[in-house]
Image 1 (cartoon, helix red, strand yellow):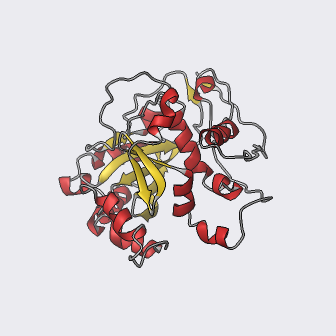
Image 2: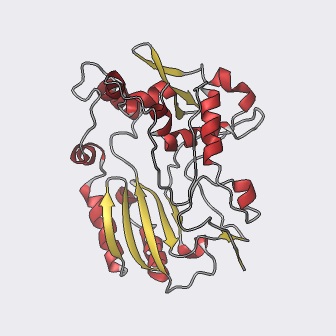
Length: 301
C-alpha cells in the first residue's frame, strides 16, 4: 500500500477511526441514519447568552434528490460509478450534473432564500445540499422560527437549520441540548477483524467497503478506487517521498480533554491507528503545525 493511498484520504480515514475507537459492549442500538423530521438550532440555543446583534451565519441543510428512495444511493453506485459498462465508470461527474441529478426542486430554494431576505438576511450562496445566509442573531432566530412553519412541500426537503454565531468558538460550561441528525455507532474494538469481514461490498473481486449498522466504512482498496488513484499507480506514481498539507480549521480534538478545557490534537494518533488496523507498512509520518499558535479552550462564564 502506498503513502498516497494513506495520506490523500486522511479526512475519510479519520472518520473511520472515530467510529473504531469508541469502545462499547453489545447493546440494542437505535436505528441509525438521518431523522425524518427537520431539526432546528437557534442562536440562543447554541449560545444561551449570545447578543441579538451578534453577527451570525445560518445554514439550512437540504436532503438530496434521487438518493433517499430505498436502495437509491446503492443503485447509483452499482449501476453508474462501479459498473464497467457505465459511461460514468471511473469518471467524476460535473458540478452541473450533480445539481441536475441530486438537487431538490427549484421552488425549495426560492422559498427559503425569499424567507431569508424577508427577515433581513443576506444569502451568501446556495448548493444542492445547503443554503447559507448571514445576519444578526435575532434575525437568524426569527428566520429559523418562521422556517419551521413552512409548507410541508418545503420542510420535507429540510434536514436541519442551524445558527453559527461568529466569534463563539468556546467550550461552554452548560452544553446546549442538541438534537443530532445521526446516531453514533458504538463498536467494540476487540471485534474489529470480524467487523471488517462482514457485509463487505466487493467490486471486481476486491473488498471496497463494509456496512456496519447501515454506516459505510471505506477500506484502503476502496479509497484507492473512489479517489481514482489506480491510473497514478499504473504510471509509476506512488506518493513515495511526497509531503501533503491539509488545512483543517479545528483539528481532530480529544473530546475527553476538551471537556476539561485542554486542547489536544489526535490526528496523527488516528492515522497511526488506521495504518495499524489495516497493516499498512511503513506507517505514514505525520506532523501538526500551528502557524498562529496552538489553539486554547476557555470556559464561557
